[in-house]
Length: 437
Image 1 (tube, rainbow, N blue to C red):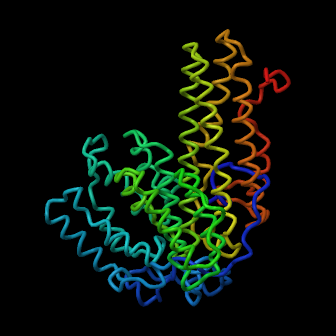
Image 2 (image 1 turned 120 degrees about the vertical axis):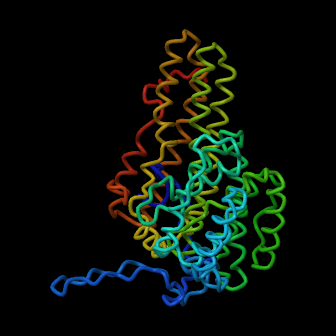
Image 3 (image 1 turned 90 degrees about the vertical axis):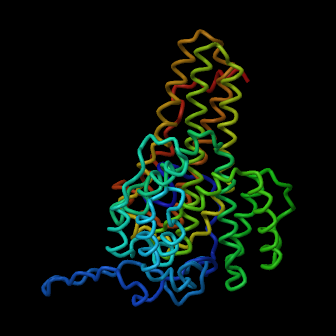
């Protein structure tokens, strides 16, 4: 990924990263012998200097923040070996290849136990041999399988969309799932995963509290004054909030979230990282849709509708501050591991983010051409612009704290790229001195 989050988010008054590079959650890599089908490293020429070793998760650390995931630290023995996934995949092929009976559990169990980048050639080849269902299929199970397969067949050559499972979420949106439902389900997963490691590694308290607060806000749950201070109480509070939140989310959305976590490494922190980016993608897509709908409303002379749409979009962007607080708990060394394993999966590839920045000037032009009173929409346009800029400045600030001025994986200049992006406005031609209030 380019930096600490998504495409061009930026900097601002972000919370300081948790000084908690401990280990509290859910990833521990198995020993090399537990991955029998992993391809061996090619020997380097004798004359060539040995490259610096890539950062890696320390399997000796407790599962949690800064350490391995629970799925990797304590895998089901059958998950650590690819044989179960291979056998179930072969049976599925022999039994008629019904999409609703695809062995997701066996495949994902192995992927999460070893990390996607360590999955061996035999399983990758078998998955690549699966003929995806028709692209335009109306069958939900076939659509899900077709959308999901790119996540597990990309190997080390994946892109941003395959890293996040973007096609799965695009189909959800097309079927009418709201961004709020997706975000609630994603935050419920974060809270569940983080709380699961607190008994062994209470150093993850800061992240778990942040996840609980973000979930409570997103799901509209009654907010207590702060989260419980001790691990046992926090685990109970998370379980209650997660149960209540999931009751508000359709089963199809919960299923999509369950299937779209295929970290490249065994790092616990990468699981949180993926979820945070998926949340931001949901926000970006919702904002882009709102701006396009507002543009259509302006063309129809319905400024009240446009104002309501833009106000909602501004609120969604402002709400990302709670998610940023979760991200700030990423230890610097944990991000180094993620960055070393996600080259080519840069958030500068985010289509939803670009859609927001492209559609806002179009909205402004439509307003200017409409002959409608400008001051009816200028204040809410400025509100959205300000929220977007604050989000980008916050991202830039977090990036500086976590990775400093290193080059971005997407070929960008990393933090300096984000700093420049933070200055770009959604409505650069908006007259802020005459907003009519």
